[in-house]
Amino acid sequence: AYDPELFGKALPCLTAIGSALSPDYAYSITQQDHLNHEQEKVEMSRGYEPNSADTSNVVLSPALEDFVKAYAESVHDQWSYAKIEQGWIYGEQINDKYRQHSNLKPYKLLDRMDIAKLEDPIREALKSIEKLHFHLEKTDAGITRIATKPLQRKKQKDKNAPDYIPKALDFNSVTMNRDMQVATFRNIKALEQLYILQ
Image (cartoon, rainbow, N blue to C red):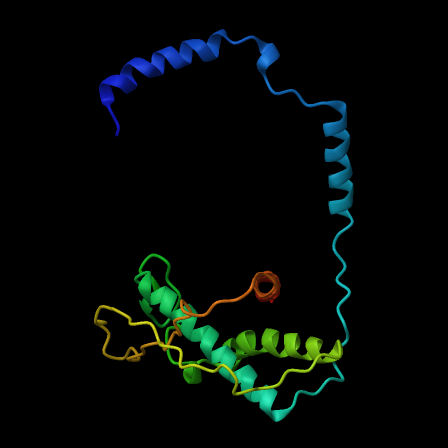
């Protein structure tokens, strides 16, 4: 616990000790550290040139296209749920000060550009999987009903705001092995970077 009296006595003591230390105790940069830093600067100045697989000739099956739409809607609901939990509400424009966002509405009401931002990275990821000669199949094995998270929210003052309650899935009961966790983490980071670049 914070004790103001102890703090008042300790601070001058620590300041005196810090002032009395010899410069020998200061962090010094070695020649090797300097060379490593210069090498990193040179490598970073070259720029990154992505070498992604050409997926322009890959066509997804209708089932995978349905998956793209369903997964994009799920991602939107998860995002909306998190925003609403943080106190955001629907607004005609994005306003950080008043915590308003124009995309806090059902997925089907999003404009084409916002839907494309959600669907395109998922579609490209699936095309890459197909290009790498992997195949995804829907199975009924091990399917259980996943509950949705309950959402507590304030009533909006704006009568024109959509009455939207996202159906965010509760994945707390879903477990993955270590390899699946690593692969998922990498995929999420890649999708985030792709989303940022767009």
